[in-house]
Length: 138
Image (cartoon, rainbow, N blue to C red):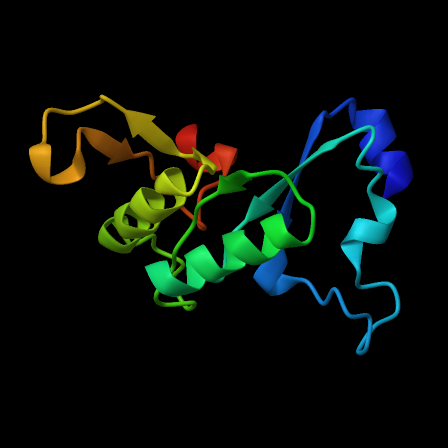
Protein backbone atom coordinates (compact mmCIF):
# COMPACT_ATOMS: atom_id res chain seq x y z
CA UNK A 1 0.00 0.00 0.00
CA UNK A 2 2.81 2.41 0.84
CA UNK A 3 4.34 1.89 -2.61
CA UNK A 4 0.96 2.37 -4.30
CA UNK A 5 0.35 5.66 -2.52
CA UNK A 6 3.82 6.89 -3.40
CA UNK A 7 3.47 5.90 -7.06
CA UNK A 8 0.04 7.52 -7.37
CA UNK A 9 1.22 10.96 -6.34
CA UNK A 10 -1.90 11.40 -4.22
CA UNK A 11 -2.08 13.91 -1.40
CA UNK A 12 -5.31 12.74 0.26
CA UNK A 13 -6.28 9.26 1.44
CA UNK A 14 -9.88 8.54 2.37
CA UNK A 15 -10.34 6.16 5.28
CA UNK A 16 -13.75 4.55 5.87
CA UNK A 17 -13.51 4.08 9.62
CA UNK A 18 -16.58 1.90 10.07
CA UNK A 19 -15.34 -0.56 7.48
CA UNK A 20 -11.81 -0.82 8.89
CA UNK A 21 -10.70 -2.97 11.81
CA UNK A 22 -8.37 -0.56 13.56
CA UNK A 23 -7.88 -2.92 16.50
CA UNK A 24 -6.01 -5.56 14.51
CA UNK A 25 -7.81 -8.28 16.49
CA UNK A 26 -9.18 -10.13 13.46
CA UNK A 27 -6.37 -9.30 11.05
CA UNK A 28 -3.00 -7.93 12.16
CA UNK A 29 -2.70 -6.09 8.82
CA UNK A 30 -6.19 -4.56 8.94
CA UNK A 31 -5.18 -1.31 10.65
CA UNK A 32 -4.87 0.73 7.48
CA UNK A 33 -3.51 3.70 9.41
CA UNK A 34 -0.25 1.83 9.99
CA UNK A 35 0.41 1.97 6.24
CA UNK A 36 -0.34 5.66 5.68
CA UNK A 37 2.20 8.31 6.67
CA UNK A 38 0.17 11.25 8.07
CA UNK A 39 3.16 13.56 7.41
CA UNK A 40 2.90 12.82 3.67
CA UNK A 41 -0.86 12.44 3.17
CA UNK A 42 -3.95 14.19 4.44
CA UNK A 43 -6.16 11.53 5.98
CA UNK A 44 -9.79 12.16 5.15
CA UNK A 45 -12.12 10.23 7.48
CA UNK A 46 -15.15 8.83 5.69
CA UNK A 47 -18.45 7.90 7.34
CA UNK A 48 -19.22 5.21 4.75
CA UNK A 49 -21.20 2.46 6.39
CA UNK A 50 -23.14 4.83 8.63
CA UNK A 51 -26.86 4.13 8.41
CA UNK A 52 -28.13 7.40 9.89
CA UNK A 53 -27.03 10.89 10.95
CA UNK A 54 -26.36 9.88 14.55
CA UNK A 55 -23.94 7.14 13.52
CA UNK A 56 -22.15 9.39 10.99
CA UNK A 57 -21.66 12.11 13.60
CA UNK A 58 -20.32 9.55 16.08
CA UNK A 59 -17.81 8.28 13.50
CA UNK A 60 -16.62 11.80 12.68
CA UNK A 61 -16.18 12.62 16.36
CA UNK A 62 -14.26 9.39 16.94
CA UNK A 63 -11.94 10.19 14.06
CA UNK A 64 -11.28 13.67 15.43
CA UNK A 65 -10.66 12.33 18.93
CA UNK A 66 -8.15 9.87 17.44
CA UNK A 67 -6.18 12.81 16.07
CA UNK A 68 -7.43 12.72 12.48
CA UNK A 69 -8.24 16.03 10.78
CA UNK A 70 -11.55 17.80 11.29
CA UNK A 71 -12.32 17.12 7.63
CA UNK A 72 -14.85 14.41 6.90
CA UNK A 73 -16.31 12.86 3.78
CA UNK A 74 -19.92 12.42 4.78
CA UNK A 75 -21.74 9.34 3.50
CA UNK A 76 -24.91 7.79 4.91
CA UNK A 77 -26.34 4.63 3.37
CA UNK A 78 -29.34 3.23 5.28
CA UNK A 79 -29.49 0.08 3.14
CA UNK A 80 -26.12 -1.66 2.71
CA UNK A 81 -27.56 -3.77 -0.11
CA UNK A 82 -27.90 -0.82 -2.48
CA UNK A 83 -25.63 1.85 -0.92
CA UNK A 84 -27.99 4.60 -2.03
CA UNK A 85 -27.26 7.77 -0.05
CA UNK A 86 -29.87 9.31 2.21
CA UNK A 87 -30.02 13.08 1.53
CA UNK A 88 -32.14 13.88 4.61
CA UNK A 89 -29.88 12.07 7.08
CA UNK A 90 -26.81 13.47 5.30
CA UNK A 91 -28.09 17.02 5.77
CA UNK A 92 -28.93 16.36 9.44
CA UNK A 93 -25.40 15.09 10.08
CA UNK A 94 -23.84 17.91 8.08
CA UNK A 95 -25.64 20.57 10.12
CA UNK A 96 -24.32 19.10 13.38
CA UNK A 97 -20.77 18.59 12.12
CA UNK A 98 -20.45 22.08 10.61
CA UNK A 99 -21.58 23.63 13.90
CA UNK A 100 -18.87 21.57 15.65
CA UNK A 101 -16.17 22.93 13.33
CA UNK A 102 -15.81 20.06 10.89
CA UNK A 103 -15.08 20.69 7.23
CA UNK A 104 -17.65 18.49 5.51
CA UNK A 105 -16.85 17.33 2.00
CA UNK A 106 -19.84 16.90 -0.34
CA UNK A 107 -21.52 19.90 1.31
CA UNK A 108 -22.23 23.07 -0.66
CA UNK A 109 -22.78 26.33 1.21
CA UNK A 110 -25.19 28.92 -0.26
CA UNK A 111 -26.03 26.59 -3.14
CA UNK A 112 -29.79 26.88 -2.85
CA UNK A 113 -32.26 29.34 -1.42
CA UNK A 114 -33.81 27.31 1.37
CA UNK A 115 -34.28 28.67 4.87
CA UNK A 116 -34.95 25.18 6.29
CA UNK A 117 -31.40 24.06 5.39
CA UNK A 118 -29.81 27.50 5.95
CA UNK A 119 -29.02 27.47 2.20
CA UNK A 120 -26.86 24.34 2.37
CA UNK A 121 -27.10 21.49 -0.13
CA UNK A 122 -25.51 18.07 -0.16
CA UNK A 123 -23.61 16.80 -3.17
CA UNK A 124 -24.47 13.16 -3.62
CA UNK A 125 -22.84 11.08 -6.32
CA UNK A 126 -25.03 8.35 -7.69
CA UNK A 127 -22.70 5.74 -9.06
CA UNK A 128 -24.10 2.98 -11.21
CA UNK A 129 -22.56 -0.33 -10.08
CA UNK A 130 -23.38 -1.86 -13.47
CA UNK A 131 -21.67 0.86 -15.51
CA UNK A 132 -18.86 -0.05 -17.87
CA UNK A 133 -17.32 2.11 -20.57
CA UNK A 134 -18.10 -0.60 -23.13
CA UNK A 135 -21.85 -0.09 -22.57
CA UNK A 136 -21.58 3.51 -23.83
CA UNK A 137 -20.39 2.42 -27.24
CA UNK A 138 -22.97 -0.32 -27.80
